[in-house]
Picture 1 (cartoon, rainbow, N blue to C red):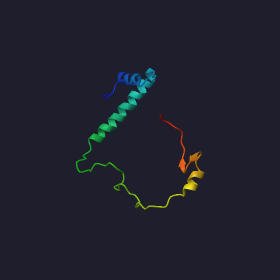
Picture 2 (cartoon, rainbow, N blue to C red):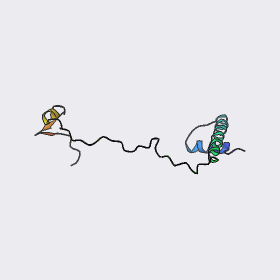
Picture 3 (cartoon, rainbow, N blue to C red):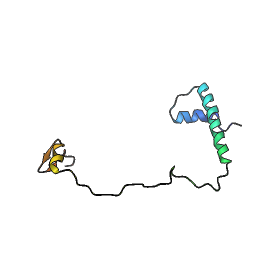
Picture 4 (cartoon, helix red, strand yellow):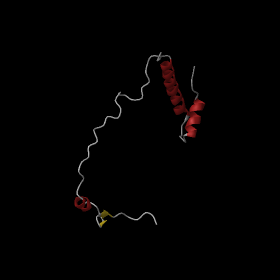
Length: 96
């Protein structure tokens, strides 16, 4: 029993603005039918005692300790910017 029809494939292709000839539609209909069949087989599995998985690993938010470090001296920072004025980085004006 086919789970998807050629007309459905052509309709979805039309919605996605994809050009598709009859041979391609037949091929994709067969392939999609096999994919749906495999998904239905997965539905038959008993997953009652299986915990849902949201992450591959059980670890969450593994981060290093937040340790303050001394920043660059202002002179060194200002050497790396195209424009500066009075110890501040000068950027193009974006608001009036």
